[in-house]
Amino acid sequence: MSNVSFPSNFVWGAATAAYQIEGAWNEDGKGESIWDRFSHTPGKITNGDTGDVACDHYHRYPEDIALMRQIGLKGYRFSVSWPRVLPAGFGRVNLAGLGYYDRLVDSLLAANIEPFITLHHWDLPQAIWERGGWINRDNLSFFADYAALMAKHLGDRIKRWTTFNEPSVIAIDGYVSGEHAPGVKNDWKMARQVIHNLMVAHGLAVQAIRAAAPGLEVGIVLSQWGVDPSSDEPSDIAAANHIWNSRETAFLHPIFRGYYHPEMVDAVGDQMPEVKSGDFALISQKLDFLGINSYSRSVISAQGQIAPIPGSEYTEMGWEVCAPAFRRLLNRINQNYSLPPVYITENGASFKDVVSPDGKIHDERRIDYLRQHFTQVRLAMQDGVDVRGYFVWSLIDNFEWGHGNTKPFGLIQTDYDTLKRTMKDSGEWYQQVIASNSVDQQQYKSV
Ligand code: IFM
Image 1 (cartoon, rainbow, N blue to C red):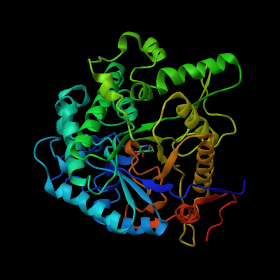
Image 2: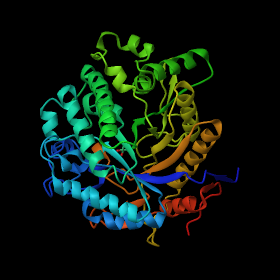
Image 3: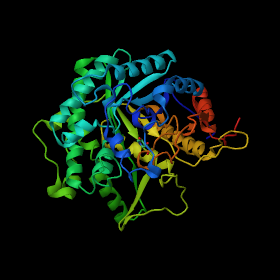
């Protein structure tokens, strides 16, 4: 295979999230989010980093859009900071916040870049958390009201809408590991109720968006990792299947089948969340597309998870690089569910970057990661998975949650002292991929 080409209307994009890039945490009437509060709490984030300034994208978005144009992006996936437009999460609208998203979207459209919007990428208004967060079902309708507000306001300019980014991470990292805001630890029961309530909120928001602005395409972004058996031994295969069925289906099954996987129900026992009548009908409304974020896989044997895998490469996040697992994952989801069109809404790699004496960042490992993953996704498309676009995580190095500014994923480097942006070789390579609509299998040589 020397050159892998993609369909002519394939959406090549890059993704970011509000808290990770915007900064301006308390400007122009923005309310506080749980991530503001969490990152301001000593000891929570590596090096005491915060998203107070982040990439300062709030002020520098014109420069960032110029860089997107330079790469040739066809799509850009961003999220809205809920407390920037509704400081308390409901009620009074902050017009300055809406105005910022107006300017961002208008500038993207003027640059011929399609905006893909995500309504919630983890920066919950602090005031909503104080009213019980995702556990209090009254708050779910506030999310739907916020979705309707945004759809009314931007539905004339944005076609593709997603409700949540990676709701599994909200629940597990926010309520079990406690490494993310709001920082609750080891509360599996609460985490399971949060998972369920987030899906109900998703369903309410889908209805609200469709009512507010008919004709929009609505989806959700799920984090899915492949689960591979460690060998062909039947006991290893059974163990891996059990992990898939009892964990990785937590959102897929309710959303695409309307019930929890029976193996998950068995495994969770009396810790299953409370389900109210009508919930599954809301949760399983037909979607226009599914966003899949994937970075790596788990390898499971009858004895448990195996890590690290001898001989495998690992990224700075400690995630194994295994592109063929991406193809298997996409095929598995496609075969098990009746899916709408799929977008790869995030994929990418954190590797340490070095500025060379020539002033450039020769990030060959990131290029190699992307090349392998693009190729495997193309193969999955040939297998029958209807993938319509691909958003590299991330456009630009940004605030990587609990890890602060220490895990660069960007096609563009951020210097956090000067806020200077530098295009990496991966950004130049991606420009060539987009321009040729194909992935060259030869080793990239910096230009
Ligand atoms: O940075 C995150 C993003 O916010 C959600 N998906 C995974 C990325 C890398 O960890």
